[in-house]
Image 1 (cartoon, rainbow, N blue to C red):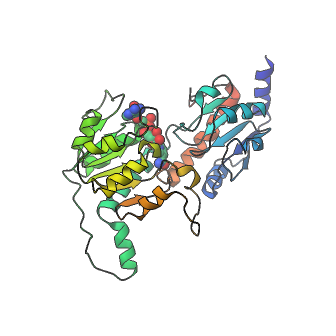
Image 2: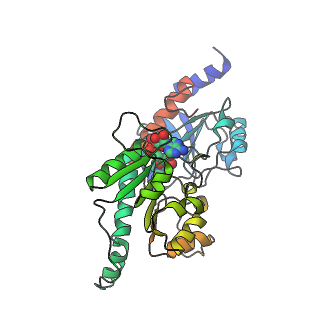
Image 3: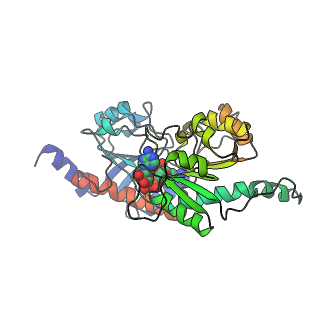
Length: 341
Ligand code: NAD
């Protein structure tokens, strides 16, 4: 047996796998501790994100566990390797923040491809209903005993056309939910599903025919700034955009301009292009440095949640169990079903 393999075996056979856990929040600690009752994994929780400055904290750990806004670029990967780390375990589905090419032949990368498509799809619908039925306004008004209905008029979802971009696990659940509301569904996917009754159209049709557009595709070179000045021009006046996928699918400046021009009727954003330095933290009492985000939040027809769509009990439980199983499988066998290649 080669040195590399005997090392791997040793780590697993002593029953303790050491994990440096970055960007840890209270809910992460609770779900991972629950999934690790016998202490098989020794997990050190770091509040800081993983990046070039913090990578030294990973020295001596078998694996790092990261989330959507940790920056696992080529420099971080070579620094991890130098410090003996064998695996980057994403506790999320998307992996656009990991330089997978740089990791090849250096480190393993595993992810949680599915933990609850329902969590994200239901959040997308919650945002849509809140926005078009002005629930966010009503909540504040009635708290102040203001029972006026002025400015609260919404519209029926029944009979409206929704364009779904990306018909994978989450997109399909969202389609089912929309059909339950009696909406007409059209969809675009670079790799359309062959086993479905989904009406696939090209992107131009999505822009031109949809009253509501919801994004459920990954962030790639193809999908970067899918919504920009040019595509907004093709959209219907009053279109509602929902983004629970990745922020950079939408050019935030173009979105703001579209809202100012009254072309875009509403925007429901669970993700934002420059969210890494803002989301997941309590910034109340601070002056927000991002003028575009501040302006978007100030709009009455924009709802922002801070990358919250995944945050259900069921999803967190699945994330913790799958992540720990991925780490154990990869360190034992040097490969894993949920490896990103
Ligand atoms: P999935 O892999 O099951 O589906 C993605 C779909 O997008 C696939 O059908 C794929 O063919 C399609 N696609 C790929 N490239 C495309 C392109 N260029 N144009 C159009 N479609 C394209 O993924 P999923 O589990 O449904 O997740 C979708 C996205 O949701 C993830 O990539 C992730 O970014 C995001 N997400 C967000 C949260 C959150 O909390 N907000 C949580 C989980 C996932």
